[in-house]
Length: 446
Image (cartoon, rainbow, N blue to C red; front, side, top):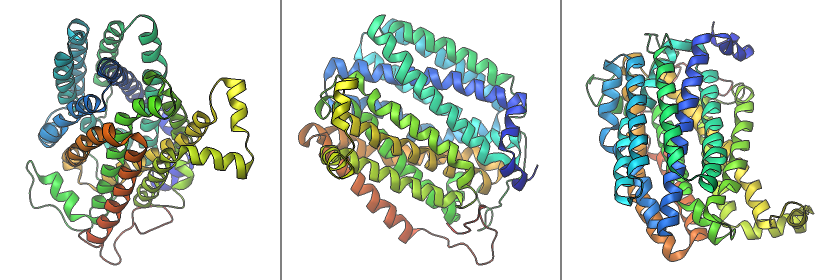
């Protein structure tokens, strides 16, 4: 099936049993992962009431990618992907059981989260690099959209429904056990997904020539030599940093700005999930009018605007009621939430929409333009660079937020990210040669 027919029949993927297995495996492992991340974050916040402590936890989730991300990509390109994904699931299940036994100690939580994240460095690159062999080169856009839809569903199930319900009733230990079961089921399902990692030529060969190095740093050279991949990587890195900052600040935003308990951050997570669903529904339509590279850029700009809106949520609520005549205050009587909470929920919708646009666009760029034998290293290198760039700013975000407040911190990270995106466009290497094949879509230039 070629790319044109894929645009008219994206649902054909859902008729293939092995793609369904991939979706089920990802759903199980992502629900387990989101349960773990939400649970340990809330446990740390409630025990310490410190932005800096929650920042340290996010860093524990991030540092393994910085240190192990690039070697993980090399391992992914060398080893059978199904066996690797099964092993990752089993090891992560063991970590979940260890959390159930040793989760009373903050030190043990940090150490186990480090191990959990270290093992997880193999999963994302293995899944992403194996995708072209499973679905074919012409259906990567739709396949990535479905995978992100599953990721979104897992976030809702894990962070919005399961984890909060368990924490309010039976506590965190049953959540750790449930996550372990989900990792085992997911790993076994990955092992039964034929086609992951089958060799296939990319839909678009890189336009700047093959990398000279084929070892550990080959992925970095692919990114460095291809302008489209480079810009997508930078903008995805900025979006990832903003998302991590939001994860750090959301419980404190709920407490300080919305005057809610920290575990009521679902007022941001749920509408963001709705926005992501809207983004996925629009993905096929947008593919006709905008290239994957431009989709990343537009998504990043929307995300930055959404963070600015959250920073000025009181002004936004007043403006909406005064000029648009929407009775947000009436929701307080009907639903028991204030107009500021209502405005926060409205502003969170474009955050989910934007991050979906960035994720779908960037993953499609990497799949289409990377050499097949190096895709594991490209995805792993991108993840490592994203997390490496996030570590120093995240330390500042957590520390400064305790001093100046959540609202100002949101505005600062949004402004600095916009500046960094502009500088990246001015300094990006390797202009695409004239007459080279385009990325796809009606819009032909990045």
